Image (cartoon, rainbow, N blue to C red):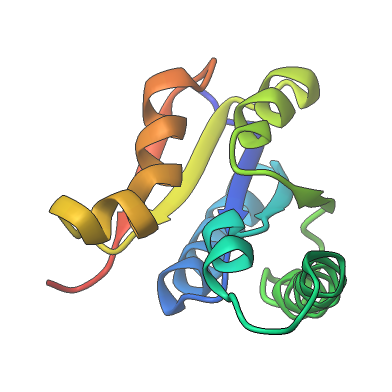
Length: 142
């Protein structure tokens, strides 16, 4: 199967950075297009607590996402067509894959289990269950 449209879900992790670099090189060799999708970590917005209003937290998360997206767009080799989708809720990664017509979805996972998996690995697990095309999980070192 020829993958011509790769959707890579990014976050602040080194795993996501490695995925963008590696899949960008792969895309260059295949003449494929790459799209980056950033999902705001909703648990961070709820778990922050304190005196900061939720709308301020969301605005800060969107700014962080825009910075991360700009940094990530620079990672693939020159000549690779890169699109971006931001900001997205984690469940919308699957929707983006469907609407954009992705042939492959790449998502990072730290390989955690139990409670920490529910917090961190839930996005990867959801994408793996629901994506409309083949999926790859880029795992961190255990």
